[in-house]
Length: 408
Image (cartoon, rainbow, N blue to C red; front, side, top):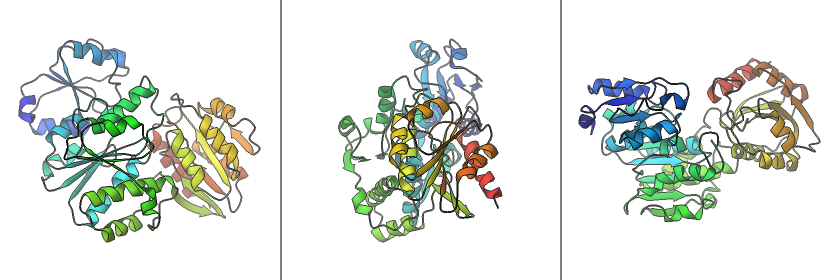
């Protein structure tokens, strides 16, 4: 496959996170390519048409006019993820879902490693898989966290596919909820009879009919007695999915239990940072849609000062507002960013304190601390993207952790 690419005219759409390692891989294998930098999708209209293969980035919508025009001219549209699936010599375990996929993929890798298996973890989390592709052996396992952007044009499915949940997200990128759901569906669509799918029972019924893989439903009740450091009912789904994958991969129960009990929450995912003067600070900064916020609120039993908001990417916060109004432990809400007015409307009638207008993380945390007292939890769970005030969700979460660690 890689030799065939050497005979083609190739364009790579930018050298961002998803293409950097691929570019190095191409250079190492003497595959020539052009790099096309761009700011908006429309800039690329007509610029792709003369290439044989275009490697897009997840940031460019697959349904964009530039991609559509190039396809009409016979250009092959590929991606880092697509090519990796074609080249990877080991079985792939792919994990997707609106929330929980990072935790589940990481826990699966930990479970397999506990059984002495050689495991490679990459995709939308951890390392770029092209960093370690040449070191993967057929007897190894590769675990990939896969986003809707990566799955949208995939034409192969993993040997074991995990689908945790699907709720509205990235609706500023996908043109509709159906497009978003269909993107996720590709993780199952190309499975054969020897493949396996671990599914959440709450998924659309159509997912049960996708592909030819054997369908297995994760069972949170089966792991109810597992000891874990992960907070929240939603994490029982993640543990159940990871444990089932471990079982399917031949891992003994004692190794699964050991991995689960030792597994630490991932950074910025319901991670307890510290307690200062009796106030506990929880970093859920990678919460970028509404369901993680709801799950986070449900997971905390003490009085909550909730920090929420950010970039408006088209999400409906009605359900979050309902949860805030129902959960009597929520005593105050600090609202930030473009979503302020929508969230204010969603929590209309809230009896606690509402604080708005903070323009930086020190100001945000100062507002939260102005109402938090000993026994409270300051829960940072934004529920949307961060581009209006921060570089990205990592920058936002790191700034929160940094400010919390300054407290005395």
